[in-house]
Image (cartoon, rainbow, N blue to C red; front, side):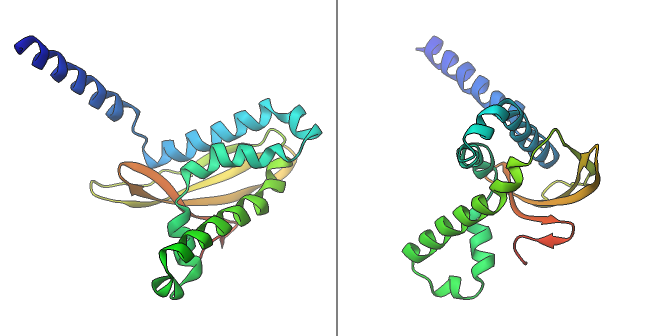
Length: 173
């Protein structure tokens, strides 16, 4: 029995340490998410030319898990959110998520080897649960485009709940 308890303890410690090792900082969350998106877009470039509708699948798989669409929906809806039923909130969140994917899908289709660079490292202190990551989309033939991601910590995972492009916010706080 002592051997089983020791084995379970080692297994639990191993699983816990894996979770800690792979926990992303806010900067890593933005870098990893954008890098994953750019890698998938580059790999699927030929497929997307033939079937542009595939971009919605890419957005659903790569972008959606890194955003807090419920909080975004709450801010977009404003005060009426408090009076809405859970069903109304869920329906609005679903529609808002689809609107966001549809709005930005065409921009994703125009991807042509741009890079996204973090231009300012935030000074994150212990206990901080909200942070802004300032980035730029850099392209050979265009001026850099400023994109700021505002993230918050949800159960140890950093999720974006606002994005501003050249100073224009997707949701207004």
